[in-house]
Length: 497
Ligand code: NAD
Image 1 (cartoon, rainbow, N blue to C red):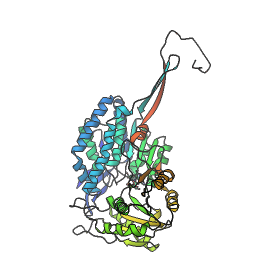
Image 2 (tube, helix red, strand yellow):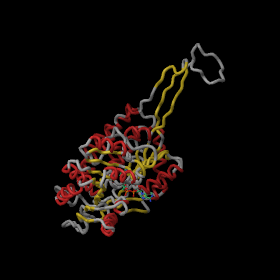
Image 3 (cartoon, helix red, strand yellow):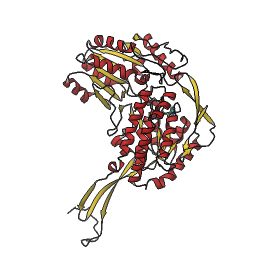
Image 4 (cartoon, rainbow, N blue to C red):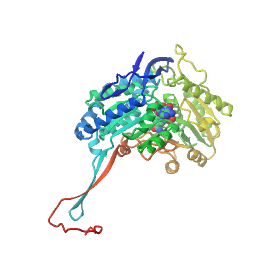
C-alpha cells in the first residue's frame, strides 16, 4: 500500500510517521494508501526549512520567479492527465471534471506568471520640494495554506503560485482524504527549478493545523474548508498575530423566475446541483422557484436526472462519481431521511443506489426534494452531496429575502429573461459571487474569489488582485536626496510650499 509522506526542503520526507490515516478509492470503498500525519515537530521542521529558504527566495529576481512559474505551468500542462487520475482515484470525481479542476488551477498559475506586472508600485514625484513618494509590495515571509478535500489540485493552486511568486515561502497542509495531488505539485515545482524549502507539504489533521496556527514563524494563513473550521482558523490564527483569509461553506441558491428559459434553467440546475456529486462549494443546493415556475421546471429536471450516468469516475461516459468517504455518504443519506420526515417530497430518490461491480463504493444517486421549507435541516445545513432542494415562493421579493436571510453568501444565481429583474438581483442580493443565467459564477483568475457572510472570515478574497495584496505588505517610501535648497531644521509640519 502506498505511503504518502510530507515534502520538506525539496524532497519527500524520510521521517517515519507516528500516526497515519487511510486513503480510499471512493468508487470501490477499498483502502489504497496511507498518509503520514504530521506532529507539531514535523510542522516545526517544515516551517524552519521554509524560513531559511525565505532568506534567499525573497531576493530572487522577478524574472527568475516568473521563469520558474512559466516552467511550472508547462509541466502542469504536460501532467494534466496524471493529476486528473490521482483526483479520480482519491476523490472520486470523473476524469473530465478532474481535468476541468486542473485547468482552473492552472489559470491561477498563469496569473502568477505575470507577477512582475502585479507587484508594480506607485510613484509620485515632487510631493514636496525635492521629495518623492513611492510604494513597494514586499513578501510576508513563511505563509501556510490549509485546503479541503473537494478540489485537491485547484484550491492549493489558488494559494501557492501567487504566494511564491510574491516572494514568500509556503507550507501546505492539504486534505488528508486525497493528499497525492499535492505530492505531484511538489515534484513539478522542484522540476521547474524552484529551490528546496520554498514549497513544503505537511500532511495531517487537527494536530498539524493547530501547530500551523500557533507557530510564531508563520506570517499568514490561507484556509478553504467548512464554516466551523474556517471560524476556528480565523480566531486562532489572528489571536496568534497572523494575517488570515478563511473561506468557509455555502448554501447556494438559484432563483428561477416564471419568464426564464426553462430548458436552460433545467440544464443549469441539474449540472450545477449534481456535478462532482454536489461536492463543490459553488454547487447549487437550493432552487428557489417563483410563481408557477416550479410546475414547468421540475418535469424537465426529472427527465435530465433520470438520464444521468453514474459510476466510477474513470468509467466511460460517466457523468457523476461517488462521494469521498463512507462517513460522508452516510451523512448525506441521513439528510435525505430527515428531509422526508420533516415533510419534503422526494421527487428523485438517490438512497439505496448501487453500481454493478462497485457495490462497496460510496455512491448516492441524484436526489431532488420538492416543497422544502427554510425550517428543514436539508435547507439550513450545507449537505455537500447530490441533493437538490426546491423551495417554492410566490413573489420575487420572497425569493430575494430567502437568499438574503441565509447565513451563507458564497454564490447565487438568477434565471430570467427580464433585464430589470436581473439588475435588481445583482444590486440587492447579499452574496459574493452572482450569476445571471449562469449557475456557477466562479471568476477567472484575474478577479478574486470569495463569498460574503459566514462563507468567509477575513477581509481578503482569494487569488486575483486580493491574493497579491494578501501575500504582500505595502511599504511607502518618502525620499529626498540632498540638494542645494536644503534649508536647515524645521520643527513644524511641512507646508508643501
Ligand atoms: P473541512 O473544514 O473538514 O477541512 C478543511 C481542512 O481543515 C482540511 O485540511 C482538514 O484536515 C482541516 N480540518 C478538519 N477538521 C479540523 C479541525 N477540527 N481543526 C483543524 N483543522 C481541521 O472541509 P472539507 O470537508 O475538507 O471540505 C468541504 C468544505 O469546504 C465544504 O464546507 C465546502 O463548502 C468548503 N469549501 C469552500 C470553498 C470556498 O471557496 N468557500 C471551496 C471549497 C470547499
